[in-house]
Image 1 (spheres, helix red, strand yellow):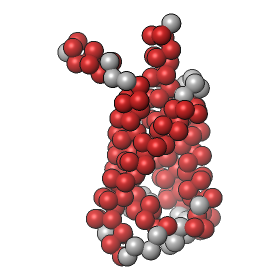
Image 2: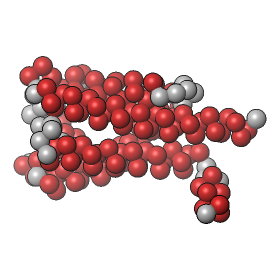
Image 3: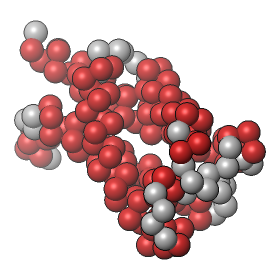
Image 4: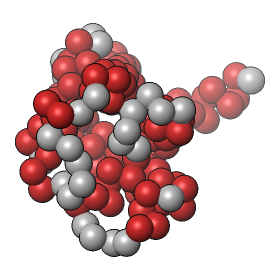
Length: 158
């Protein structure tokens, strides 16, 4: 068991960031799909496709699963952005704020450009609360993981 921990510990910071992005994107997209599947939200991960007119398949399970895969890859970019901009901020609050900002950018700022997405104030309350909570938890996962790794790097280098 100790050798396995040492192997992970020896991974470069960039690889740890990459893995954090993929795992965070995959895990929270799957949770989002479950929330959509059980009707906690009217918007699923296929929200990614709504900006383009790609056909009716985007609302079907294949569209949702494809969006989950793409969101996992997009999450890598988001995680690296967090690493380079906000990794120095300690604690969980910046991650929570980061997730809320991502939600605001998608559901409020980009809303007019996303075909078929209701205006924010016309959405059901459960959709707003569920998606906001999911984005906050995603931001917390990314933020806390990256900040922790940054602190660990600083500690080991001193």
